[in-house]
Length: 123
Image (cartoon, rainbow, N blue to C red; front, side):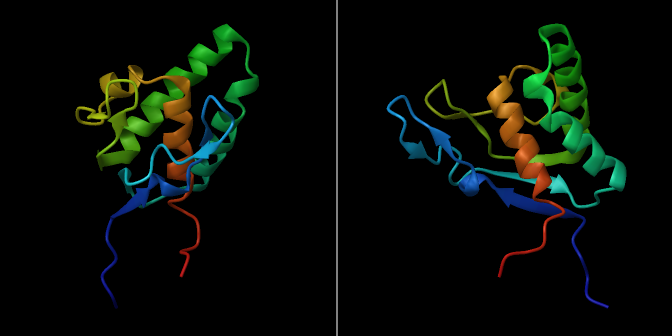
C-alpha cells in the first residue's frame, strides 16, 4: 500500500483578484499553504458556512471570523504566505494570533485554498 502524506501543499496560483483598474491578477501566485490532509464532513460543512460570511451583519461577521480563524489555525501546518500590504514580507508562523491580524480578503483566500484539500487532483 503506497504511503500517503498527512499534509497537502496547496498553491494560491488559482486565486484571482481585480486590481484598481479592474484587471484580473494573481496576487497569491507562488504562495502556498500546507494543510493537514484529513477533511471531515463537518470540515466541509464549516467551509460552506464560512463562505456565507460576506452576507453577515457586522456583529455576526466578527463572530464568524473568529470561528474561521480558530478553524484555520488547527488546519494549517506551514506556509509562505505574505502580507500584500508590506512589500510582500513573509508572515510569521500560521498561529491563531497571526491569522487574527489578516484582513477578510486574506481569510477568504485561505479558506478557498483549504477547500482545495479535498478536491480531486488535477492531472
